[in-house]
Image (tube, rainbow, N blue to C red; front, side, top):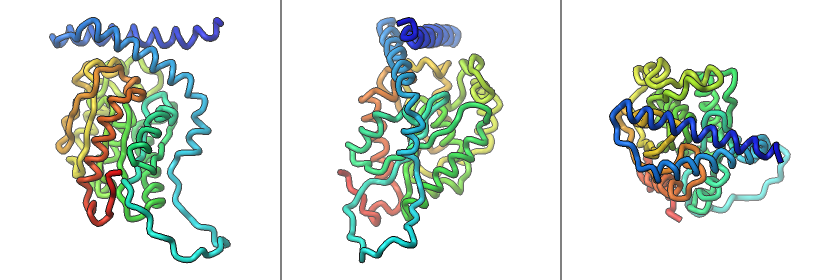
Length: 299
């Protein structure tokens, strides 16, 4: 019984500390504080989200093997089966990128929701948050995207990232040459300008995400304007990106949209947030070059 209390205590500590800092930042910036009832709901979402994350986390290695992109390479000994019949039109493949300290189990529900919405080819990119840095993780993401392109030649995939995962996608898109490879990107609760909570993080990667810190300044100074449509979804009561300004992306070509008022991690489990994210992906697919030629359906 005492062991079961450990994750609950962790979840409560995360919710209380983060929302106290959330209110402190709002007061310092003279920003209007949300109603107390809304914040209490956000704390409940935060506790539930952390507990779900802790429960699913051990399944990460198994989950990752099932959903990572792999280039298709037919066996030279495989028998010929004649011409391959034409497949019905489908939506582009999607690559999901999780956030700091998480793993691919973050997308447990999103994979199901995306498939129900017609995105039948959904993949996840996983990475370690320890003993690494932002540049190395962007390089790893580049490998994953190129594996996905090799698996689906001639198609432009869509990218979606939560929290740091979204910032990694933005870092990858900073190279203008990469923008021609994808149809667009959607981020959820991403610290596009960093977060003051980063100073409480464990590991150099977490601490590098400081609000308006060196990493963010370097990214803004070197990135190309988005040549493909990109959407940043944010929650008005996000408790991990403090101050709220940290959620606002200023890069030309990005669109900022508010999601339902939920906690940072609950964006991964909230159906209404998922509906907005999936609608954004569909809109990006519709706007992709060669959309009519590819014949994607809106199933």
